[in-house]
Length: 149
Image (tube, rainbow, N blue to C red; front, side, top):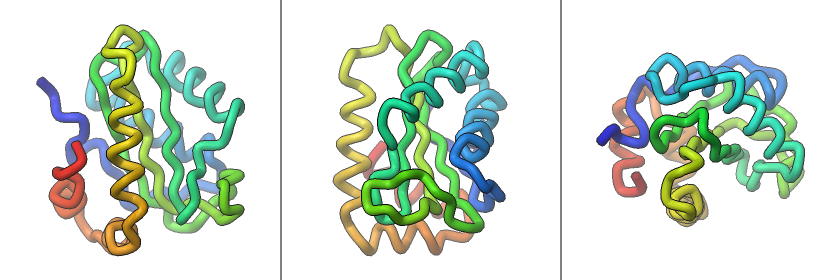
């Protein structure tokens, strides 16, 4: 089975001034890795979900997500922004790190919740968040995340 994340699903230097642009950058990584059947359908799903309720959880982090038929396998893409952007975060602070989750609609019904819960627990740790901010290479991030995914 494919791993949920690999180094091609990580971008450590995103230049974005909107959350929509940032999410589209990460979706393009998923598309390039063959994780999506239909990138435009998944993009619509994620943007619609974001319009319902912000996924900016605080601490400079957002976790947008979508569950739809356009997703082939459960996938996480990570992006670190070169500057913070407005995300209507719960703490009112800009976002500079994004975990985008994609789960097939027909997968186990709570799979995305398991991924969200595991990631959220880890993100509560300040040292972990600082490590995410300071990582220089994709392989370092994969090592950091291997205990989650």
